[in-house]
Length: 474
Image (cartoon, rainbow, N blue to C red; front, top):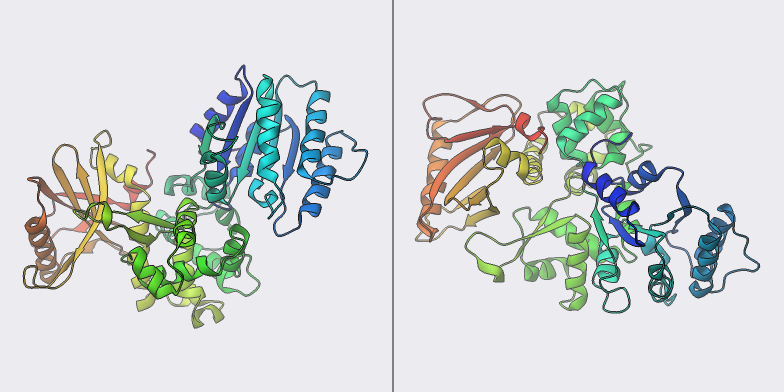
């Protein structure tokens, strides 16, 4: 039974019920639940279902394709030598099928496109020269290397240009969906536990499916990540190696971004990562963005010439903060270092990530769900004009000429604003007001785990959002 995925399911069913042949692309990050979604929607309706293999040759891919054909009732008279023959045999299988709509599910399609194989060429020939002329073929292309789907299929300048009829991205779960998953697992977890788990794992369903209901969230994190035999202990290298054929430069980029969490320009990344400044770098950054590891943001008032890249993948940040350090050797690190300075610093930063991942829920909590907005972060360095310098975690610029200036704080209890913090917040607002060129109202908005503890310094906060608000459905 699916958790969430209502819109994705609706789109798949709509495409299936079409009176025409349809070419559907389902894409998203590795382990986000793409295959599970398609299997649950179509169950036993597949005319042909095949999964590409990672890191094998064209001949091995073709041999496995032939086995899949035979599994679905089509006997090949000889070994397949190329993709032309492979797609011809698929056409034969489709013609033999008596199903009203022939569901062809090719999972992990990017892995089939081995160097020099001409897989995309013969996929084009299959669709344009044969399947599209019928009214009963339902082709689902799926892949975790989202950048490949976008580059080779969506942005194809040849025969596949504009041929995809449905584009269905599968996003990570929200906090609310992760809460539903823990309940299905029978796990007794508070919302604080789930929030902490989300800051570690993000909304990746596969990771959450590994939780042991007999353990606490902290105990699960130790068992899965810090224990050497844990199922996710080596996940980082497996993740990047499975998505990128040459992962070294990709790892260099996320490494420098992990060390510079306030963001970096393209030029700064190239310099610190030690990679070449060419078209491959642009492709690399695009790949990481499309796969959900980094984001590209324009700083407030900076125009489109000052693009800043940020690491946004929760698990990758967790890896560099803890698993890529000496802490990884302690199998009980998470349960025995609850109040460590390193963990507190990570929690503040990771909670910011979670807030950016739940902008819709924040807008709903503020009562502006239907208002057009743009989201930014902002910082200025120390200089003669801005004095001490300042940084704002999250800005929500609204079409109704209001900017919600958001301060994000993670805490294990209600947050108490001190005199020093009040002065710091006021300094940020003052400096931001000095650089803003538009006449807009500024509303200081406080986003925290449990809300504010009201005292003599909290009165200037205009609006509050708590972690409970982030759990609500859109």
